[in-house]
Image 1 (cartoon, one colour):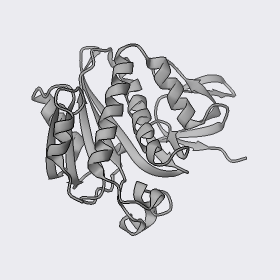
Image 2 (cartoon, rainbow, N blue to C red):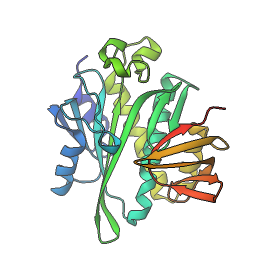
Image 3 (tube, one colour):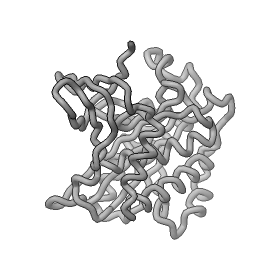
Length: 262
């Protein structure tokens, strides 16, 4: 299905997210392109959208499958006037916005996985990658990269991902209008970003926890050679996961989370 970029641009003239949209048939990575534009002074709300990525990037240097003309691959330039330490809440805000949009298609079936995956009934449908550049101890700009599987069929996924990844088309049996989805996403991102800038961090954390359904569950978090285990008690003020373990409360900043099966 053709991506009607001029229609999308018309929706967001004068708004924060999407006021400038750079559209490409193919890029190495939308995050890489957005970083380049931000370093050249691109204004807040600039969005890079690509039909395909030759080297799509996920968290922890993983790749992101990016076949052409099926899904939504985009990155947003944000320039909040905040301390660098406060930027860790941005991925949570973005995750909530994505989950809100996908929930319009699959009500009650969407979950968030810490720190930045969106799932439908345990299968990954969206990945989020945020990258920041700083000036002294403050954020100079933040790139929020989002990849959402919209119209992939099962056979389009690599064999090793077919049981762990999904798309909206698989879950709804409908072809998804990518411009309509993008427009909804821009609206929810803009709303969530306003909440963040106006001191609504607690509301973002609360909604993220509602989608995650993690509080009270025993988990392990693996990061490189380190494994941390405990019971999830919530998120701290900067979005770190709070685990209560044998040695007391721990703050977990990064890693892969797995729920322990009893």
